Length: 302
Image (cartoon, rainbow, N blue to C red; front, side):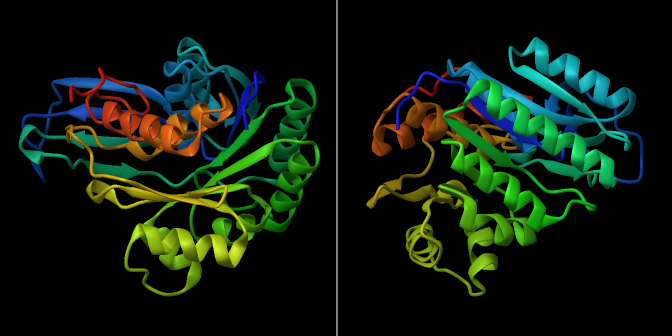
């Protein structure tokens, strides 16, 4: 699974992610943040930023719209992520994570839905993604985040299937109808336990059982996270368990994206699954140590 080519991230639901650090959230009154951390966000771009921090070479194809989209593009390039910016008709959304000192390992998150795609927005994005695959020959393509209204899921699945025909491996991190539409054209699926349960239509008891169910039903490698309880994976037929995080930081938003970044970067380097999961777990922990989704703090001490 190793390679020297780029990792390609596809961001259909791009956002400007803002982390507000407040002394206390005053519901119904004015709350003034002590610190504001902006990042180029959406799950795919959080993953891309974390992968670059881990030494990966990453290029993103991102839908960006309006003045907010222009800001997101500048932020992402400043993070060292290569970018093909695809202008779309809707304004790029803004998502907010509010962190309080007494909140422990939780935050209050306010996420706008992505603007719907017009037909020409989807055609422009698909053309840009296909061109990037042809030019960059990525070893891994990560399709991550929600899918905006207006995108035909069968058409998206057809494009992703073409990437695999071109020789790329596809990692998928989404939920709901997009997950159901794309799971059979992916090589690797990374979801949480609730998302896995929704996909198979029944409550799964734990991450290990969810991996077995996904692998057996869809023929994919699977990584299933379960919050502070850890994660499980079945990769190349081998079953693995990731224990609870060693440390619980105050900034959990984006930790799942950082986890996926660590896993893909390691697989891309040819590191076996057990080592890849160790790097993934560390990346998720480091994300929670610093404000800004996909920004990695210092590694926790053993």
